[in-house]
Image (cartoon, rainbow, N blue to C red; front, side, top):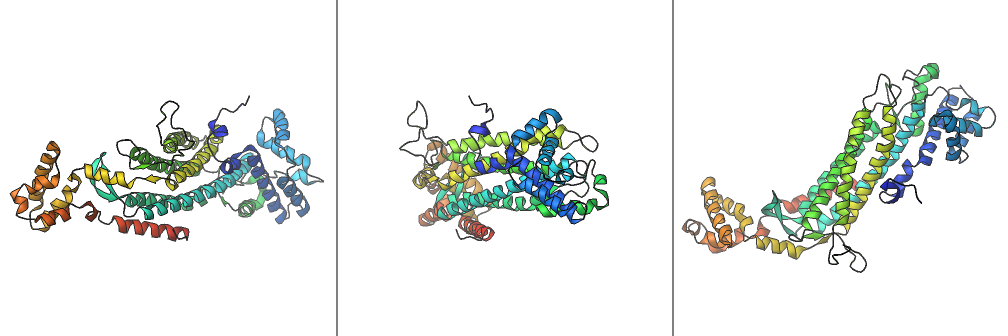
Length: 455
């Protein structure tokens, strides 16, 4: 029987992201940090180049195993020191004496975490780019597709479906920018010893820290305690939670528009094989969008322990460690999976243009109240007077379930201002989408520029 209890182990998440945070990867990243430290010492003449090369060889090989580290940890009750001892065992000659020279545990742990975060953020950035391309393609395809805009869950005025998607593009472009901006702050490591003074590293402390981080492609904490400042992690996790919340917003719109009484879009459904319900054989459920909404709630749940882990006693305590073993892997695995799911939904989205038009028709022209009012103003009628004329005609149309155009045309104050042909033109939804199409074009262009790729 499997001993898995976390759904990330058997249901959610993608291998590429999980591999970054797997135990074997964590240990590998930590050994790479140890190797970079040894090379920095060697470059400054503090250990021999040969010993640094041997430590690097061990770090890059598969000689140090998880099993051996766990055996040692039974006695040390310290996972990082168990890894250091396991590396030392595999080093030939005198090299083992210089593993972990001058470092404290969190020099290695935090710097290895920075390597993981860097790899994870690069993958998330790639996911965002793929999703942006999908959205731009859909917006361009549905640029002219008429749909009712809704406010307060009520009919408002006409838009195009492409315009709705253009709003999502604008939002996702901001995330692309935010990820680029946060990268240097999120991938800071440290090589500063027990309380951040670098005392054990000697007079070359700053040179060693800079050399190690440069070697690994990271930034560094300029004034560390025993750990990298956890405000960095708080900002990072909050960004991922905010991104997840935007994905939930998009998914919620798909779910709403797939409701039976709206029916304007639906997730792709494999009619040959897919099952919507174990008992209601007709069901086609928006399961991917619902999945994203549920996972977004779990993702936001990781924010609170991250805030609490920012508050450490004095130069540090251990209260953050256990929490971060949950938060970082879960947050990145979830956001990667959610972006994958949303890309899948929107790349295969069925857009029911005929139902969008039927819903427009079902409004009995009431969604055109605003353009009629504005047309009145254009004819010289005061704005407030125009509003009252249209409001009264709208109330009659709604109460009697009639067309707004008919209740308007019954009024002498309308017939004095408009011809029937003019009223027809004013009340054509296709003539009142404002800058919708231009906004779509602008956002598609923005994606092409950001990705350097034609949609």
